[in-house]
Length: 171
Image (cartoon, rainbow, N blue to C red; front, side, top):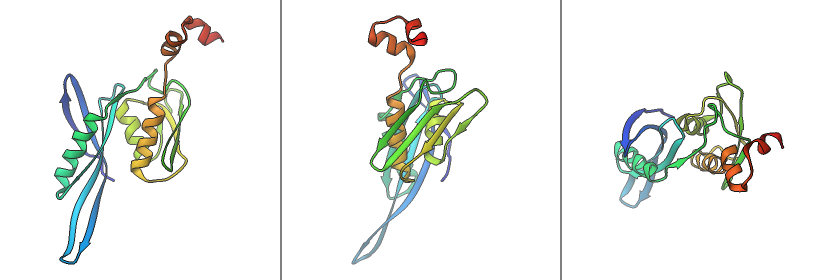
């Protein structure tokens, strides 16, 4: 697993790119073996915007570039509240299951592998996270995105329900 950081601009967004995984794929034919590469990439601006992508090509650099282009097409905005997530949330994709919980300041990002990369790219600083299902990086990333896309801030909840903000905090 390699973490390659680069900075690109999409519109007015400065996105940092991190390569989560590079895999060599072999196709065996009667003429011999044919090698290609697939790269899983996460991009984010560190301030609530994050995306993921998968690129496949004959060369590693081409696969990474295709992954970056795919990630820029799959950007989502997530709520960052005081450097952590607004509430506890679980996400699922295939056999990948994740649990993301808010943490107190100074905790850091307690998460493993691919999930840590997504949370760092999104701009979280204090999060507790656990991967409960598969360790497959693609499914863990997609399950993390599922959990993050379900997040709502208290302001969003109050506007959706049409009630005052202090009623949400005081019950």
